[in-house]
Image 1 (cartoon, rainbow, N blue to C red):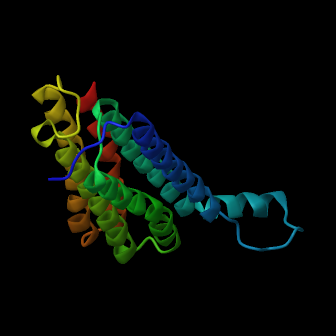
Image 2 (cartoon, helix red, strand yellow):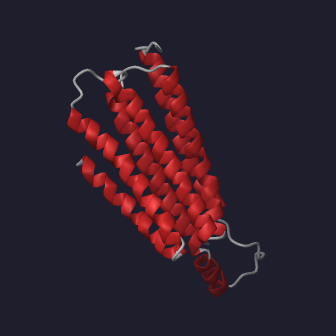
Length: 199
């Protein structure tokens, strides 16, 4: 059996490192928003047209910013009740951070192409990220392995339900993408409603 550590400094370093990856990933999203290279002699009307023409990049940025933000909020909530860690937990957290760091790439694919393949690729990335987030919580909570001793089952159900709802929304959107890619992307807005269960 893997021994859990109650080293507070070690846990703090894990949290700080995680926050840094989330922050870098969310910052990198904006680097993909670029105007076409048309030179400096552009009229006001042409510039306005160019700014409007890249609306898919704005949309992809907004969606990914909110999704990464929601994953960070879930990560933050979990670590408010996690008191210990072990090597398996660190590995699971690293896999989650790997998925988070990958989101800017899938966002660039979505903003550039926006077709069914790009939409499904994006949704599958979010499903994988949600599954790892859920696995982290289940591992930490199982038999009180890493969480505070007085954690009740209602808290566990709330933390379990959130990622599962996110996963379900993105899974359904994959099916919708075969009908209409824009409809699939629109369905992702439902993810914002998953936060209501934490009220």
